[in-house]
Image 1: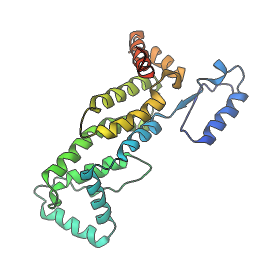
Image 2 (image 1 turned 30 degrees about the vertical axis):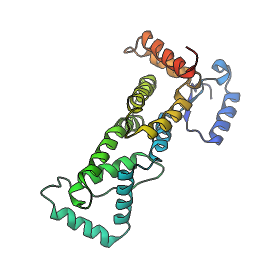
Image 3 (image 1 turned 90 degrees about the horizontal axis):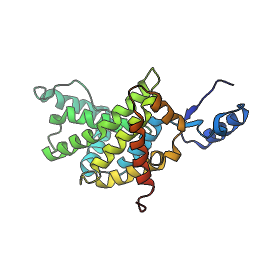
Image 4 (image 1 turned 90 degrees about the vertical axis):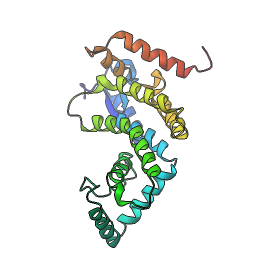
Length: 237
C-alpha cells in the first residue's frame, strides 16, 4: 500500500483505529498522516441536519405523525388514495406519501415534499400548515442538493469541498435570525463548527485540491481562512 493519498470515512471509533493502523504501515507518509483522514461530507451534512430536525416544528411534526399513521394500515392507505382520487383536479401527481428512514435526514425532506404535493387530500389541515412545510422544504433544499452531489457523483469532487462547506455556512448564517428556524440553526451551527468551523480540523489536502482547481483563486482561500479565524476567535478581534 504505497499509492494511497487519503481515506474518506465517517466518525465511527473503529474507523479512527483503522486509520492509525494504516498510517503506521505507510512509508514516508506526508506530515505523519496528519491530513490522511478526510471526513465524509455527506455524513457531516447528515449530522448537521438531523441535529436541526430534532426540534419538532409543530406543523412538520403533525404531518410526520399523520403520514406514519396513514402508512401503518392498508385500510387507511386505501382510504387516503381514494381521497387523492376525489381531488384529482387539484392533485397533479401520482406520487404517494413517502416514509422516513431515521438514518437518512433526506427521507424527511421527501416525506414533506410528498405531503405538499398532495396537500389537497388533507382537508383537516390549514393553509398555514402547508406554508410552514413549504418554508421548511425551502430551507432544507440546500442540504438536499449538497447530499445528492456528494452521494451521486461519479467523478472527483474534493476540489469543490471548500466551496461547498462555505456555501453551507453562509446558508446557516442567512437563517440564524429567521424566527421559523432560529433554534434549529443554532444547534446545526454547533455541529457545523465542530467539524468545519476551524481550518485545523479540515485535512490540508482539501485546501490543496481547492487551490489546484483552475476555477479557484488563492484570494478565495484567504477569505475562507479569515472567516474560520473569526469563528475560532470570536472574543479576540
